[in-house]
Image (tube, rainbow, N blue to C red; front, side, top):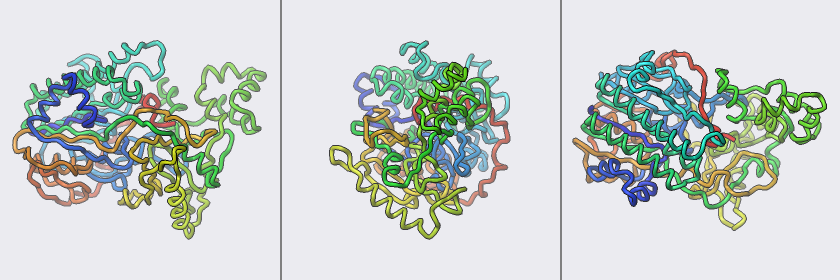
Length: 537
């Protein structure tokens, strides 16, 4: 193999440092010692579904079009797929220059591109993803046994002990390594890219429990060691989409703040947006939709809730109608949701759509279906919101935000308007942002461990300049650097640069992205567990 890229979700130096104390990652440490490493600054927002596409396309979300876990059509939404990524992945550029690739478990790669090589999609695709070539998953399972994208339990599942859940984590990591080694042997690619996801999930699900972190990293490290031994790459890179660490301050509820300031309107009942919880069960039951509409019971709760009753009292009313037990049995999360106070998106002037977008969207006339803010008022309103949000302080008198900025500072390109209008970057990523409407503006963080801005990048092997300074490496730099390592010109649309560990191969103009470049494989059902990670509220 010419070049290998190992993706470790949420990897960062503080995590590596602690694992090194117990000699838990000897193969990763060996790669670092033989090469060079440094912090890898992530993008804003530093979350999986947007950051990995930014890494493998080399462009910002305003150019590739994915800003979070869901894509919006007005006030409606659906879970993102690779079809929402509107820029060429680096393996397509390599394909243009007769370089083959094997891609395993990389997020947001379903449905897969058609290239010289193999793609086995990962996170946010369905449990049995479409592959390239077709039938690849069956080949993998015949070779290595069972292969799964997701664990066989959900967060909060009381039928599994924590030990059993960690057993499943390690099983998934082994599946990644075994599948990659099998495909690398079968296809003999020039470029290999394998991603390990549970190194991130363990922090969300188990709140940074070090023994559990250590265990999944030990298994991941073992798989990396076996990949290195069997594939013998000439050069290897390790990269993460962001870092992770404790959130030791407060949770700030932006929509509650905007409601109190007169920007958000609320309503009782309805489906609201966006949430994974109400569609989780229907997808597990085989429903292939990637969005959610209330069912009969949930609509009934919403209708009762509009009279001013709380969800619990609404169910009591349904009890008298003989529907309460059905509501409890078939739609517990949907009942709570449809019976709660929610942001009325069409009636509001500005709101947070989802916390992982890390910002505020203005309901703009002519852009949003029922926009209430006139175009002529947009800049003044945005300046007003920025000024107000910049002044928000925690109960301790500290700023909530390190930066409140217009989107142009972080997003540029044909899809920039699809993102939020104002980026709200938590100070030091220690304040947890929530889109929920609750009694208070502040509370303890819903998740005490979450994403930090700095991940890590490592480079080692033939032709790698181990004296190179990587102190200012950025997520957008990974794509052009991988191209250069393989001697292929990177796209002149990429926002990153070639890191000084390899010689710059120069750029060229590639054809504009079009939907016809993507595989038309059927999307299938998204049996993901986004709620297990707590990404969507």
